[in-house]
Amino acid sequence: MVQDMEGVRETVLPPPPHVPGNATQVVVQLESGQQVVVAADAFVRQPDGTYFLPLRLAALPPVDRTQGSEASTPLVLPVIEETLDVHTRRVETGKVRITKTVQEQDVLVDDPLWREDVDITRVPVQRVVDGPIPVRTEGDTTIISLVEEVLVVEKRLMLREELHLRTRRRETRQPQRVTLRRAEVTVEHIHEHVDESNPKT
Image 1 (tube, rainbow, N blue to C red):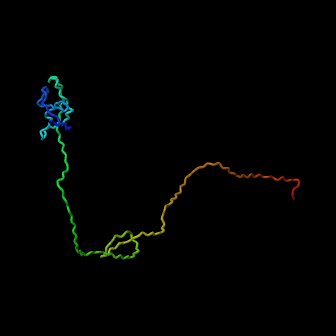
Image 2 (image 1 turned 180 degrees about the vertical axis):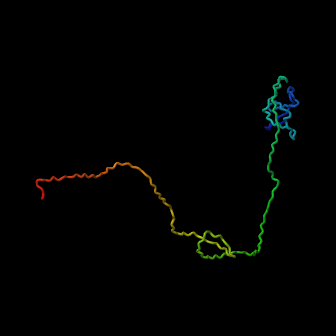
């Protein structure tokens, strides 16, 4: 018996005498009575004595018994190759149960605890400084200086700019027509006529 890849079980028959190379080929008869030729190395023997065929028997060409070996139609035989498909799966091999028990115990703890207190004393200074004063330490006293900005208003004379005046002399000509008046005097001597006939006494 042989089973194909679709699970169909068929019967293996001796090959017909006209099939060439019949030593390497076998004939499988289907339930419909049709016979097909399969390469012998395509069968995989199973542990129960049957054979597995990784092909579809119904898709193989049928055997033609009506013609001789020389007139037989060439058979198309599929060439197959086995491949390995490896899968992994999880298998439960056992179970573990873990039980946790909490135990309580009273313990007396008497450790010393330290606490630091800070005394702050404000000391007025009211002195003008040039800039911020860093923190300093004198003995066990840390001194932190607090400064603030104050507004100082002061009047001062500031030379804003200078005006430089320089005198320059240059000669220019502007021709103009001007009417000038001049007085002229004409002196005329007038001679007085003397009457001689009446002389003055």
